[in-house]
Image (cartoon, rainbow, N blue to C red; front, side):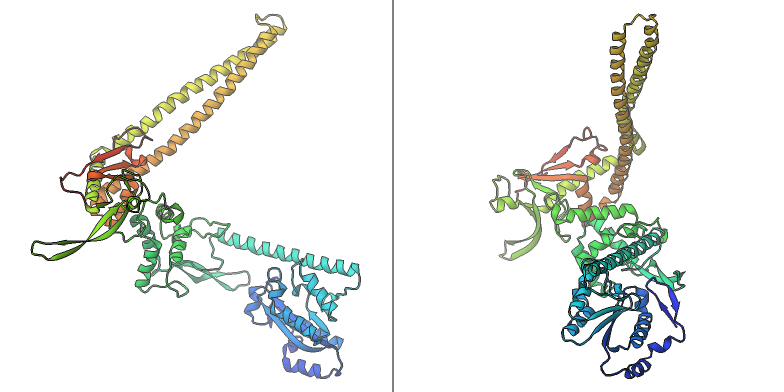
Length: 576
């Protein structure tokens, strides 16, 4: 018979010792003891998963039972704790410790026996006093390997504390070894247990641990991986909220791995989990990239998380997306009142009007309203309500003009012109500063060479003059080198900026191609990124402020200067 010891090692139990695990045999041995034999309680504990899996604590039971028979003690109670950490779980929360304390108060035992004293616990600030409590209540505390622990003098108390202090240290070392091993497995791309993220499943692929036992690895779950991809796409491209996505999945009858319905928190955990880009990630370890575990690309992950951040309550003021994904308006989140500057809200309003024949007709129409004005929260001389269809039509016309411009412009020439414009001055400045550094170095070298001539009396400079010239040259060289280093750093920054420009350009072109065929939620997301804000004033005068990242492609002005496009309502209709 085999058992797993406290180090996770499989050890064979001798055939002669297996008899001590037989309860009938042990009961016969107890019957041989006199009626007044000391009463003993046995306490076993294991914290390793391997030992718990065996549903027994054979080694401790054998040693403790043999020890009791050898000393003539009658066993009145045997209690075992399985999977309980002695270094993390307080004695107050351990049923076995509390059971034996109650039994000691009732004078039900004379001896408490454990295999090793650290079975009582490994908390140095608590366990020594647990042992001392039993001794003070007339119960002897014994270990099969360490004998009796007495508390008769100050030295006994000190040794008692040192023993459990050492046990706590061993526990910390064990924890560190286990943590290090798990980190090594994760960094190597191996699954080491724990909750399996939605979209994956844990299966046996032939890998075994050091004991030869099969262990599981992660792979994509074919039915769930497309759902994960859809969650990211709807979040990033349509601005869907986590509540709406959870409701969508629940309506399809889908459930989490635990069988529960999806909630907003479930969706957010999926969106925030970077492991879907092809990594095994724990708190402190990130594996190398594992292509077979990748569900989405990094760009989609970033876009989805950016949208989730915008929807966060903490960013309510800066939010550029509709508060509710089902909002029927196009500009919710980016439309502002041109008169008081307050953000306007989009909503569906039921209009009621009467026809010539007296029939009352009701129509549900999307509208924007200046909430601050309607509630008299601030002074505003603008309109209270605007018809969303008319405002949206003006903004759509502006957006189409911008997209038509980018489609008409030669892509290569436009990009090349922009990047050259960014580089030209930086490169010229770098060349000037490089020459300045060389001139300063040459001047300093010249003055230093004059020092020897001055000492020989062959120089036209005095010592004082040379000292001042050298100090001045060193100062100028120091400044020139600092400026040159800054110019190099700026050039590197420009290279990064050029990459961002190319990325923005590609995105802008992609929007131009898909905009007309895009759904309302998708158009809302595109406009939310294209425009900083949309201002609406009386007479449906609409001003669109283009995002600085994209205005450089439409000749609206210098980079960094927020430009605006103003367009009034074309029709001479009455306002809402």
